[in-house]
Amino acid sequence: MNSYGPAECSIWCATRPDVTDPQDIGFMIGAVGWIVDPANDEKLLPLGAIGELILEGPIVGRGYLRHPELTEESFIKPPTWIRYFRRPISARFFKSGDLLRYQSDGSFLILGRKDTQVKLRGQRLELDEGTALRPPCLAAFILSKPADRVELFEDALFSEPSHEFSVLISVVEKHLRKSLPRYIIPVVFLPLHYIPLTIAGKIDRKQLRERCERMSWKQIQAHFDTPRSVRHGVCETQLETSLRACAARVLNRSATNISLDDSFFHLGGDSIGAMELSSICRREGMILTVPDIFRYKTIRSLAPKVQQGLESEIETREKVGSTFALSPIQQAFFDRVPDGEKRYNQSFLVRLRAPKVPLDVALSVLVRRHAMLRARFRKENGCWQQILTNELTQSFRYRYLTISGAEIQKCFIESQDAVNCLDGPMLVVDRITDNDTEYLYLVAHHLVVDLVS
Image (cartoon, rainbow, N blue to C red):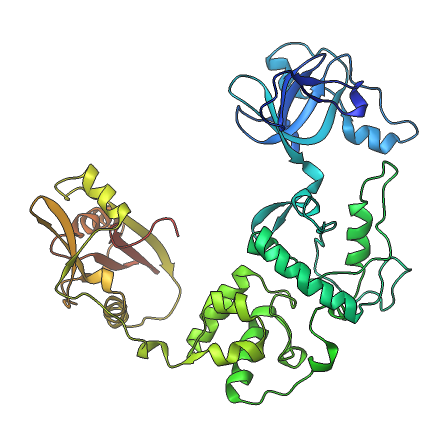
């Protein structure tokens, strides 16, 4: 048997006699449950959506004794949407703070707590997933970047890092890599003399978070797993100097404040920053992959992994003149349009503010650089395939027009029709002057450009 009920609602709200899933709390008893947006209780969510459970009915309590602010926050007046269904049963609704969703049979599935779910590096993270590990971790999460506010520990909550602690952290990190996704792995571990608890005996995450946010960057660095004795170092090669300069641009830091042995992620880097670092290095003539940044982390360790050479010198293997299979999205197009003649373009209209430049030259370079703009599509033995060509002039069309009014709309329609996935062009560009305003209209077939990214 499974049951659910917060102490604020006297105390049993849902039950499931025949338990097959511990998260399935069954159906409401003595109350009515609603699923709302965790950030806005005036927004009722549909069946299957994950949201906060709010409770209505005679079992809802009157509030917290001598805590009016907390009462006002958790015990709310009936939301306006209730009028679309009926009159409210009670004058107060209780916001449980629990994340649930309706199941197809009307029962409820509990998924976690609203106040333990955070967003980390673009991913949703449930802190209880960390505390459920052995040994438990992720008791707190720093929401903001540390600032140089104080230089001394406030009291004995945090202890000074020791050699034994550093050894223990190495073991814990190995364990976490086997148990958690990479984006969840902590970058800083703080030793505690004790774990602060709330009155209810739960981990006081709010106090931990606030105390961590008040720590200076210097204090945070003291808890990194890299020994202080090797943190300082002078770049021994030009490659290390260049790599550190690129990392400084991504991290928005002075290069002199980045040691050869500082972890990119300890300094504030994340997965997006790793992609940006890889891109900047490529522009500077250094080939550094994102997986290598995650694996080696420091300038000293990354430098031997860098391949040097201008991007233009990177070998490209274009299958010019040979047919090759379609991608899934390309195949989906021809499944819907077997003759391949239906217009399926992506287009953009932008206003030009730059001085007049030879766009035809730039477009020629663009088409030469991106092979798919020189693609053609053929139907052989009933199956569509693609082929790359070396044809530049037939692969794009560029016009410079001085028109206005209805002529501009006619120009757009004509350019859309001009795109031809069989014989080219795959890219059509019009530079339009309308009185004193210049526009650039670009059209390309969706078979060779990506709408989503």
